[in-house]
Image 1 (tube, helix red, strand yellow):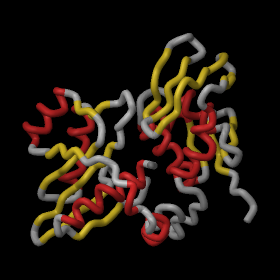
Image 2 (cartoon, one colour; image 1 turned 180 degrees about the vertical axis):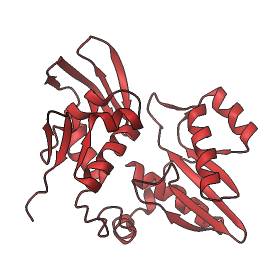
Image 3 (tube, one colour; image 1 turned 120 degrees about the vertical axis):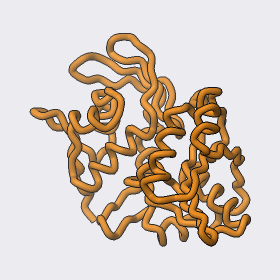
Image 4 (tube, one colour; image 1 turned 90 degrees about the vertical axis):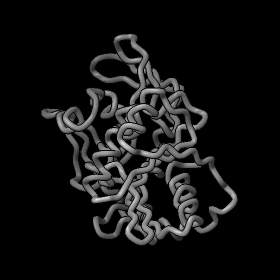
Length: 239
């Protein structure tokens, strides 16, 4: 199951509770994946598919959702996950009035997922003429990098694991670390929207893992790495 499919499951859960739901685009969602409305109630829902992974919901995610809830004028916020939640996240959620909801995957009712995502513009966003959705890029080009060794000017990066939470790697300095999938989403969104993303932009909008993001995304055949300044450029495949 992809993160988008899990978002659909969460959306269906709220539909069953009598809410009108809206799946947001996969990028530029400001941390809200689903809006649920009923009467005067408007819920900002953030979805974290962390089941069967080492990643856990942390307090920063709760704080980010609280800010997004206020930004969109929602009455309250819900963080839905199938994974583990850290104790400090529970504490912050209770203080800020954010509900943490455990929802397990339901794969029995996903036959209409493609139709739904097409209608929402998530698999093909006609407004911005995006021809590749992030989930497609991740599944077809990034996940197959697991177990491979990539090289840049600083040395080699060994890709230990790639799943729907991010990339775990050993860097050129021999350190092991994880780049969260959210950082890749941010970079890909900028690429597809503006045609390029610089290393400086990545550093300004995520943790300082820009060299790893540029190296890994440069393996996508239609993302070309350029230097001076170091950046990735989107080369549109011929129709």
